[in-house]
Length: 358
Image (cartoon, rainbow, N blue to C red; front, side, top):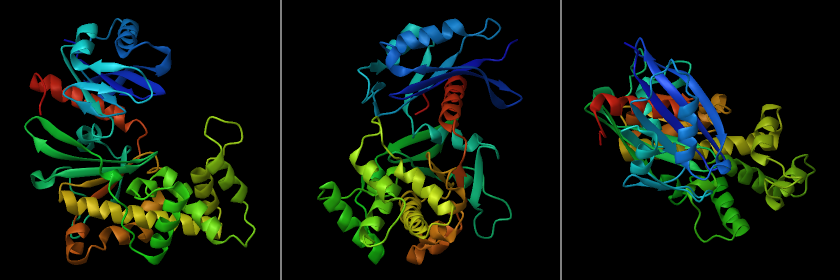
C-alpha cells in the first residue's frame, strides 16, 4: 500500500511554493513541488487545482493539507495584504477535494515543525546549563516559542497537545521598544524623529530592516567622517526597493561588518544586543522551558552573531531569572524551507488525528 501524501503550501504576496510530501521511514520527504508567481493567478483555488493536476500519477492524492499564509488567519479565513484574494478552508477543501485542510499563519506554522527539525535544519546556540545534550522540543511538556527577524519581527508560541501541537500566533514584534543602554536610547529617539513616529515598535529595530536603521543612525551620528556606506544609506532611505538605484543597506552592512568595517561592526553588535534582549524577554514571557528557537530570514546569515556574547549575554541578562534562561535549550532555524516543512508536519498531524487538533 502506497504511503499517504500531504499537500503543503507556503503562500506569500509575491511567490507561492506548493509541495507534496510523503512519510518514508518516519521522515517527511518532499516528492513533488512547484513555485508560482502569486499575482499570475486569480485565486488560490485555481492555483491548487493546477498544481494537483501536475502531480505525477504514481503519487496518491493528498489526504490532508496545510497552507501557510503571510497574514492573519481567523476562523478558517485569511486575506493577503498584497493580493485581492479571499480564502477560506471550506472553499479550498471543496476546490481540491482534500477534506482535511487548514490555513495557518506563516510564522505560527513553524511551531508544528520545531519538534521534527533535524541537524541540517537547525543548530544549537545554547545547549542549556547542566545538560550533556540539548533538550528535545517540549521537554517536560513545556511551552516552546520562536521569534525571527526578517522584514519584520515574527513571534509565535506553542503548547504540546495530544497528537500534535497547538500553535498560537503573536504580534509581539509590535510591542514598544524598550532601550537598555544609552546607545539604544539615542537610537530610539533619533529613529522616532527620522520616521515621524510617536511610538517605536520593537521590529523597527529588531528586524532585517532595523539593521539598516541602526547603520543609518550611526552614519548620521558620525556625520563628520567619510564612509563608503553613506551613499548606500541615502539611496536606501530615499528610493523604494522596486526602483533603479535602490541599495539594500541591511545586507550591505552585514557584508561590511564581515569585512572588518568598524562602524558596520558597531551597528551589527548593537542590533544583535537588542535582538538578544528581546529573545530573552520572550523566553520569560512564555516560560518556554520546552525550548526557544531563533528563525526568520536573518538567522542563517547571522549565525556567528547569534552564537556570540553580543547576542547571548543580553538574552541571558534577566536579573533574578538569569539561571532560568541559562537552563533553556536555544536553537537557530537555518532551513530556508522550514515553513513549508512545518506545513507538511501540520498536514500529517491533521491526517493522523482525523481533523483539526486545536
